[in-house]
Amino acid sequence: MSKIKDCRSRLRRRLGMDWRDDNLLSVALTHSSFTYENRHTGAENNQRLEFLGDAVLELAVSDYLYRNNPGRDEGELTKLRAAIVCEPSLARVAGGLELGLCLSMGKGEERSGGRERPSILADAFEALLGAVYLDQGLDRAAEIAIRCLTPVISDVMEGRLERDYKTELQELVQQRGGETVQYVILKEDGPDHDKTFTAGVIYQGQMFGTGTGRSKKDAEQRAAKSALSKISK
Image (tube, rainbow, N blue to C red; front, top):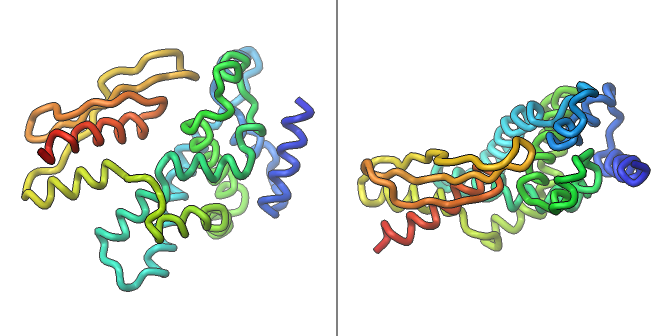
């Protein structure tokens, strides 16, 4: 526990803010596996804050891209945003903040490598932004989001990040004058704190690809990659 406490102290210094409600930070850094294994405590996990932080993140990045790229159209901005807020990008930022080490996590999840799992790291970063938003407002949350994401934004603008298969698939379909693709979650395996998802891509009424990942976003990216290889032939 002392390691987690030390890590959270470093995080506070990195963020450079004084929390009005310390409990918000604690909740943001509590993984669902911890509350699952400690149900008797009534502790809250970070899933609701993740939901809120996801919206804060998208708005912050959208605003930044709009203001700093006056020559790019809506399609280009959408593609840039997707690359910036994708799971690998957020996991990279969370790793730099040592969020994995800061998390209160169940013993089973920790043994299975949860502190390094990209989906958990990305979710923790979104939850952190949600907590900052509730504690100090949108402007502060957006400032921290962009500051933390600056290396990722630079890489995206220079084309140095991995491909966003969902955006590529949608662009290919639009070029062919087709309807939009739909993503469905076909299966969820495992307990709530350690799920594996299988997603499918439906195009013109047919299943064109499936993919499995540790988060819905990852599963959809893998499904889009599979569909791209078929539709582009």
